[in-house]
Length: 421
Ligand code: IMP
Image 1 (cartoon, protein in one colour):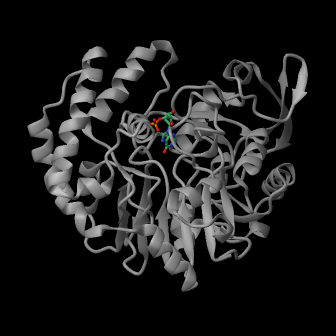
Image 2: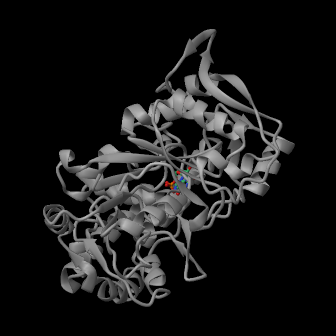
Image 3: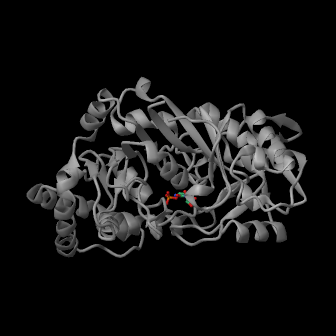
């Protein structure tokens, strides 16, 4: 495959950054296609840890052309903070991407407050309100943002509407002059990287380049196919790549679905296979399951294959990459959810109605665990038999072959089972 999408198969935080970083060794181009700085992952490069939220995972490798495509929403302040930490890089930003402004962050907080007990638990990065403005034709695109006069005129119009909204919600108003004076500086920093990324990507495809499309969040957080309303505001599916990058659907060769060997979720909303108590605390501690963007403790659950089959159907998955397998070492018995019980009926899908999804009780199979430390294994055959059986069962239940698994945070703890790039 020459053009591969890296898809999060669960509720985000599956280790996509690590898999992208691993596959990027063979990539010419790495593309972020949706979301904004609500995402987050750590890339270790030359012994230094880098936290990335907005920039594509290939940004630390000067041989890679990185692209922030039209489907993204970009916070210019966060952008400048991130690029300032990196010495040299190759980056192109779509002129059709949308800008996240301070009033989006205020609106995000205000909507969450308004929702009270039904809050989504967003990252408060203004992502939802920025996409809302895009759909309402009240957005600011990168192309306008980097043109000084047009930015000023457009911002003056937009801020009137936004301040009315903020006032109604009891949120602080934003001062036009302050905002303009601060953001025009960011616009000038962003301008040299801006271009027509669809044109560029189509040329790269014609030149037969290896391209990695890096999803943020996971399919269960997809605005259309996720657990609405407890979702983000974009689509992390492989099927959103053509629209969000400006290439033809048939030019995407396949998708690698990244899944944890268990499940996590951060933020509110149902998670049928959730585990509470000591075992959850143990997995959270061993797996360091705390959000990269917000620091929130992640909720922990057993592996849920109804979720993975849903992702396979709605996004498309050619291969699986299983991460954090080492975290399960030392647990006597491992459960895998194979279907749900909904009001006495066995189902193998995710109900659209959130009340129904909340009522779903998982049906589990139980597999024996393994005691051995597996952080040094170099091949599938090195794994204890119980770990091999667990992985084989996972592949069988999802019906997607395994290409990669990982047993620790380092790049050399990532094991390639099948060459895909
Ligand atoms: P938003 O994307 O900030 O609007 O948040 C909507 C939901 O998506 C919340 O449940 C967040 O916790 C979740 N979310 C957003 N980005 C990520 C991510 O990168 N990893 C995991 N959850 C995320």
